[in-house]
Image 1 (cartoon, one colour):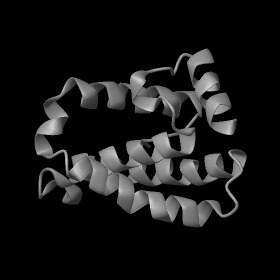
Image 2 (cartoon, one colour; image 1 turned 60 degrees about the horizontal axis):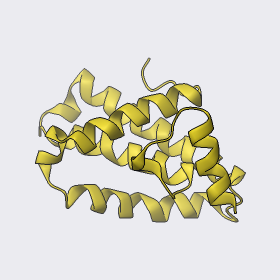
Image 3 (cartoon, one colour; image 1 turned 90 degrees about the horizontal axis):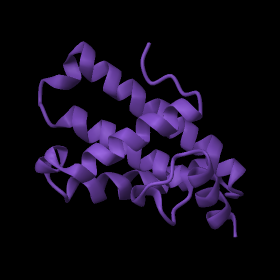
Image 4 (cartoon, one colour; image 1 turned 90 degrees about the vertical axis):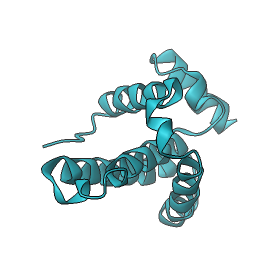
Length: 126
């Protein structure tokens, strides 16, 4: 019930998209964090740059938001829940390979992530 309520809420606020269908917002936030992290790792020297720092910061903000959202969704132990999701989401996106960043799916996800972040009033960059 909570899952459909959350998905319904996402559609009602204009965040509806095939990319988030059927999963809690906390999971979508962890997908977003994983995508920011993956983007940072694609260029080996990037983590040492200002852009790399911003990507790392955005991933951390999204992960913290996922913990807060998990509380709202009724997770008994939100920190453990997010800690379990983190490697799962990283593995999911990593297995897609570096070329995913050139796909329509990646663009849709990043658009969704920015929209969700704005809706939740998350500051992904300083």
